[in-house]
Image (cartoon, rainbow, N blue to C red; front, side, top):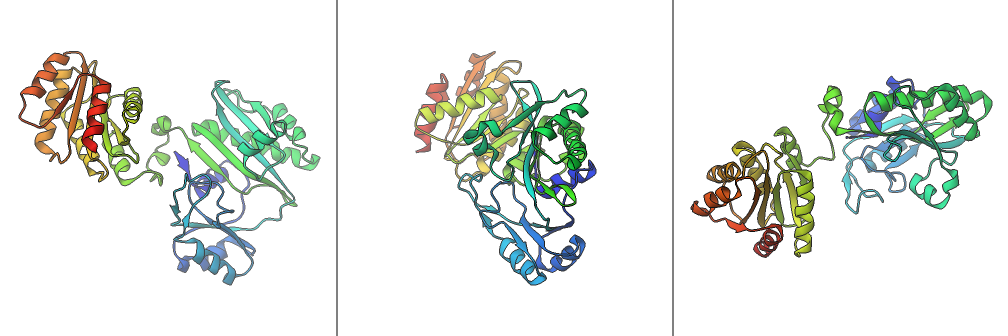
Length: 385
């Protein structure tokens, strides 16, 4: 789960990581005067709260020096559609902006903690050249990137934090502050089961270090340990994805015309690849999981058919623990409750597959059976045309 900047900074603040004075988030211009007052004396920074980097270049972050300038900036940002290099060509509607006090920046640094899959543990990534895209910096100047592995059982030791501060060339009077900040960042990462905690830029000011921007990404599989985060409304989810999540179903909306119902993430990937190879495009995929029953299959059909892009549905189920005849019975029972308005292709494989196919063949419903995945994908693509 990705957190917005102001949500990330709330965690920073709770872990003693210094952040700019905040006036909080506003959603209407009427809330601006109180927010400016809370942020303290100007200048102020008005920041669009969307899950994308590159907001400044796209006009989503503005520095203002007077209340009138702040009002104009907030007016222009609230409600705008922000498109950056990280939004894959799609615009993100700005529904809230963060009001913060400005900072006198002397120097910018990059600092993050990421999950290093090769090292099988967290690693600190740092660079003395902050404020720019770290991916671009790593490609153009790999020598400017510092790495510090972290033992998750002990966190970041003092000597490693000091060594990092020296490598970054920080003035002696700021080494202690940096060590505290880096250790706190690692603690935040570990305590919240994160996959990324990023500060870019971490700025040096006359008063010390300040996390000017922040990004936190947590592992969805660990959300049961963080009920405060689990109940948060994920702005990246569509209404259908949100409804599926409530029903404990995994649903991802895509841009094609074939709805996919599968059981298992690997089968989902294989199904979508095969559809593309057959000349079609998946409109979504819905994973009913290993315990596919009538209730889950019914809900799955309801969700898939709510997507107006769907011109055909491909059900690709492997019967392992759950037998194919039980799955077929579940599909037939679900179709009595759901009005099917598009062609349905069903491919079953696994335990009791003959019984399952026989049930579908005898049923008085319009189902196109498929022998294997390639056959199913071709029939679904043809049906969607």
